Image 1 (cartoon, rainbow, N blue to C red):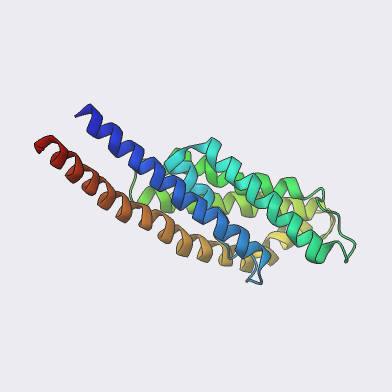
Image 2: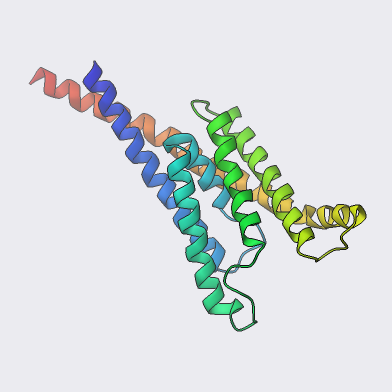
Length: 198
């Protein structure tokens, strides 16, 4: 019985690592290829990996994906435009995306539907607040309360795109894991039963 549980847990972790890796790979491609602003799998990949493998693996995947895609974007486009590789607003973006891991670890572990949905909404709200505060601090808007409000109001369409991306990619990642893990565990149990009989 204990061996079966270990087999099932190992199977689930391998599957989660595969799906999380695919999520981060898709996030990298989505960032470096043309796309609607903020409509990427990044938040969903961070949340999924935190919920199924832990915050540490999630943050490693996030940092690797973001740094690699930032380097590619800078080399391909932004360097010629005179932008630095990492601006002082970069930490706000990274910390904003890391919020998905915190919400997922808190809300999504062991919960099938409501937890992941709440984690994705919470993560996107955190990103919206943190990243746009960084935009405001960067001087894109007047350094007044009215300027801060204007910054957030003008960012609402980008948040809408982020919520849409989180809904689509979150459903794909969490849904694929639930479906495939049930199949994989059932197959592993069948193989173990066959070995026991032989």
